[in-house]
Image 1 (cartoon, rainbow, N blue to C red):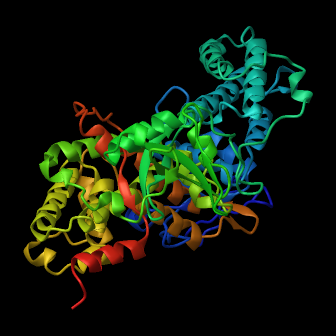
Image 2 (image 1 turned 180 degrees about the vertical axis):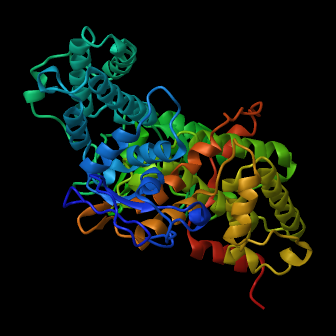
Image 3 (image 1 turned 180 degrees about the horizontal axis):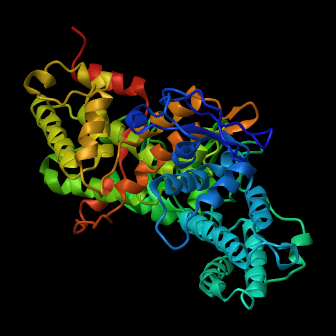
Length: 553
């Protein structure tokens, strides 16, 4: 093989022709289903060098530079890409942050782009083809990442540099006019996200943090801005809270209004209080930014009652819920399931594919690069707690039985609406230990089996048309299993076989969103009920409620 840093793997006994390419595995047509089970495939004794040259190869591992070189060599400009090249391109762009920085990729692409002074004796057609292939890859890159890289200084500078190169080349290579127009659109898009003006001297300045997992495994994209939304927990007691989805810039008065409606108090009777773990209390004023205050280290946001002298009194555990009416029994189950699906879709549709890559490879546990994914996971957990909370706070047996039936119907409707995330969350809520022990309640039950094996889930999910919402914890489990079961680097070469498997799993998000979800007509009376769940997040408190309504025999 022409490069000592590369390997070529091939079945058969005959000597191979020499290729300056990354590490490959040949896939025989008959063995495609077992693509990852073996590192070589046998070939017949009749194989010739000509047939070897025409066989299909899949990249298994190699150096980043050589993988990129091979990828550019396989790109087709006029015709549609073959499936293998299209998949390799998508795999590379989805996972490059694992083994190289954005600046590394920018510099490697610039080295692949032939400049007028470096062209030598190459044919004009070959030179223009190489240029166009680099530009095509960059176009695919920016299209795939959309706004994910808008704040990356290296990419901004790279786009300006490559645009300047195309401007210089378009007179000698008129075929680049199409790519020039494309880059004007791309650069215009990125300039809207920066205050920097184009300057050829900008490249000599120090840039901000790179977007890459290679160094420290996790870099921050930046602090939260005022338009971003999070789930804010407003605690009623030590073990129960109202989950409020709100912008970071939401005021204390707006938060208080939501919570007051949820627990059926007037705003005038309540106050928002920041309580530190050391016990210090700070009452929030109406115009205070409640979320930024509650995000400070070692603190929680509580709602307290005001008495006539304006002194603050905390709620006793479950006191505010003892006389609570079971509102859900009067709500149409299909409408409630639709509102759950509308809300889940808004969270799911906001997840960028890169968030799954960060979630899998990050070692520091920060959620700054997985904000949307974290919201959906938190929502799944809260729906599970909400189901258990609603059932355990219902003290009357007859109503509790009705409530269980109601949740079973809601879960069935979520499944019919192709929302597997809420479906599984409700099923798991019904099967938490504190709920499943209620033998009297379950005498009339007909519950879905929560231990649906993964094959049954996958088969059912494959048959569903998009748009659909997957059960996200299982998808993350799949990606994590691939990551932990395979090394990222083999003999200092990128294990691209592993990255292909991860990228293939991540791409399932794309298939789920092939068709855009059209939200149903909003039910304004249901929206606050579904958006702001009231849950008990302490298992001991849930068990105490469980034993109170059905004491241990």
